[in-house]
Length: 238
Image 1 (cartoon, one colour):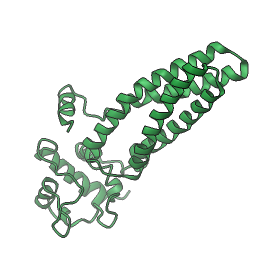
Image 2: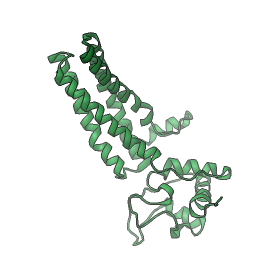
Image 3: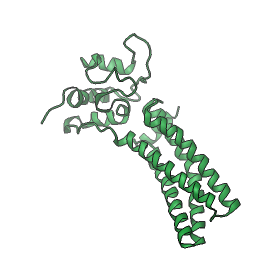
Image 4: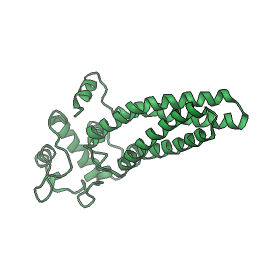
């Protein structure tokens, strides 16, 4: 749906997910609001309470593009696969939006020093910690083995398109159908045919998206196959 955005960015040399570039803003602003609000309460500094309110207002504004880019990355890189960390993020991201809206509205109605506002800031803080943790699980929770230099290109293709659902050669969506030892890895032709038109063992369509040449070129498919063979399927033991 948003492939044109990623194609445009790729033309500029940017080939990474967009969401991580934005997520630091609302998280940082929520943390700042939480800290300033508590210091304002403990030291009785009303000016810091107003600073906290300004931070949470900016966080509320910035959370909209952050959520949008998160949905775009989910569709583009994970084909809307319902991984457990993504399920958690889909629950807590709207919750954060509601909490931030409440913090802004109540903060202007009852004042920046309201204890009700402080409680909401605290809930926002807990929510961004949860979102950050599960976001980290998607990126760092399941690391693939370090690739040899000769398959670095394939490692990049794997990281961008496959790692989310097939960490370390497994299969988060269908654990009984891991990537490792899959019959489609018998030879490159079988592998390429499968990624261009993936099918379940019974011939039905599964959740794995088809990777056309516009998404993974023939050269990249070859690089990807070599990476899987050398690092996942037949890793070299040191």
